[in-house]
Each structure stands twice: as C-alpha cells, then as structure tokens.
Image (cartoon, rainbow, N blue to C red):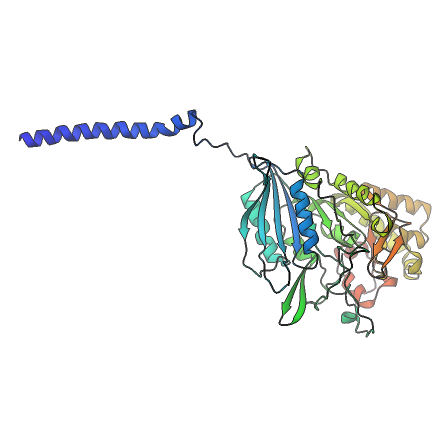
Length: 447
C-alpha cells in the first residue's frame, strides 16, 4: 500500500513536470522570436513576374548566356519581394551531342548584393525547350509557384516570323526547285563581324510557323525542331501584359494578329536582329521595377543603343503594338485590299520597302498600299488605324541582312511588315490563306 501511494505521488509530480515542460516548449518560439533568433521575414505575395525565355540550344548559346550575365549585373529584385524574375532556359555547351536540361530559375539579389540563381525546376537532359508541351510545363510551374497579378515575357531565340518552318532556310524543300547554291539560315545573332549559319531539318508536318528553334543530332545528321506560332500561343497558360521578341523577322502584322488574347502588347523587329539584341543591362528595371512595366521604353532603349554604333552594326528596326486595338486595322485593310487588289497583284515588288534582304517575303505594310496607288483619303484611314494600335516604332534608318551580306536603307517604316503575294509563291499563298490575318482581311482571296 505504501509503495502504491509513493507511486501515485511520483506520477503526480512527473505529470506536473511534464505540463511545465510542455508549457515552456510552447513558449520557446515566442521567446526566440523576441530575441530575434530563428525569426523569418514574411514572404510577400508575388505581384508581378517577368519571364525571360532563353531558348539557346543552338548557335546563339554564347550570346544568350552573355545576355543573362548582363541581366545579373543590372537590377534584380531582392528575394523577399513582390517582384519575381524568372529565367526559363536551355543552352548548349560545346557540341550539340552534349545534352543539357531545360530549367526554371529564379534570379534575385541577396542581402549582400550578390546575384543568386535559384534553380526551381530541372527537366530531364535532352528534353527540348523548343517544344510546346515542355514550354507549357515550365510556364505552368511558374504560374503555380508565383500566382501573380501580372506576367510579362521576353523571348530570345531564332525565329522566322509567319513563315512555314524551314521555308526561309530552304524554299526548294517546298517549291521543288533545284539550286546550285546552298540556302543558309540567317542567325539572329549575325553581325558583319560574326557570321554563322546552320541547317534546318525538313519539318515533320509541312507548313507550320516557327518561333523557337533547337538543334540536335540523329546519328551524324544535324537536325532542328521548331514551335509553330499557334502552338506557342497555346502553350502560354497565363495572360501576358507584354511579350517582347528578341528574335529575327517577328515584326509582322500576321504575328501580332495571331497573338491577340495572349499578350496585350507585342514588341518585335521587322528585320534580322544584330548580335547585341536588347539592352539587357536595363531591361529588368524597365519591365519589373518600374511602377508600371514600360516595354515601350525597352524598345526605345534598343534603338538608342544601336544609334551609338557605326557602320553595318548601326542596324535596327523595332515596334510595339497594342494587340487589343488591331481589329480596326484589320477592317481598314480588308477594305483597302479589296479596293486595290489588281494593283497589289501587279506591283513591281522591287520598288516596295523590303525587310528581308534577298529573302523577299517581308515588306512594309503601308508602303505596299502606297505603291499600289492608295489615295489620300484611304491613306488617312490607314494611318489612323495604324496610329491607334502602334505604341512605338523606331529605326536607325538601315538594316543589315545576312542573306546577301549587305546593308539596306529603310525609307518607309509603318511598324509592320507583311507578305506581298506577287513576291511570293503558290505554296506560300496556300499556307498564308490559313492565317487569322488573311481570314479576316482577305489579302489572298482567290484560293
């Protein structure tokens, strides 16, 4: 009995000690917090996300890596910020046979001012970033991880505007016309002092538009893959405030029209883009750190930078448009294309402002109609529609094309390039007739 009582006393005492211990344990985080030990700063909800899509598993890799270095040297938001800078990238390192991984990386500056690259997602080696499914996987991850109010994107890679995949490099693949000359692809990062080219494979599905490009080998054969414009647009899960292309020949009315509903503002070059691309030292500050993103300023920075260059390197064209205001332009153009159909069909295309060098598939939209004899009243209608959707346009007055290794003057520049059927082909006409722009404007209306 005595032992039983002693055991009860022990249990009571141990119970009290346990209660005291649990109370003290529950108060420990408060004590530590009051002393500043283990305290965490509250993470702000993301408000704005800038995505840099750097698709460089091709001969642009070195240039694109330099661009990323410039971004890191400029403004980066701190980790505890409502501004989020994201890099979605894949680059080659040496031979294309050495596989690398597409990755999602957050860039920020730590408390010591050091630029940090925090890899958030890595996909299997060899998986292609120039693939709509892979791209969507990466972008959905970004959207889920950082459910922000606003998103914007800058894309840097190869591109060929509205053209069918592979056509720009090898028209004979489609036209079945033999040529003694090799038709080489014009690299986005081509400059007079740095010339390079690569082969495209024949596309698996004929006549698709391209916006990204990735090189790979099948055995000893160099191949490439691309993403068509419609698939690219569908792969973007979030609505974009802006979409800027640091890529060749994307400044087409056809491209901008196809991106309505995807991005409010689209910025692009009508010509080939020289090696420096955008001003990446300031681009994050312009798009992410400003009270309101300013893609127009990015475009004006672009022109200002190239105006400081000399010779062939001082070559640039760019514009930025509000895609939400393009319906009126389509309506006006439909009327004008119908009115001047015969004149457009019989134009001497060599008299019209071309942006493609010897690749004559990109012409100034307004100059086409001007050379077709558009009267003053119609010109006023067109100028009003252009002004309504054109937010900024600029040119250095010349552009360099690797297609003929020449510098060309820019005498007419409305901010949009467009296809000119009399300078094209039946194959291109058939493809072009399926574009949204042509469906709504009837530029080609005889198929």
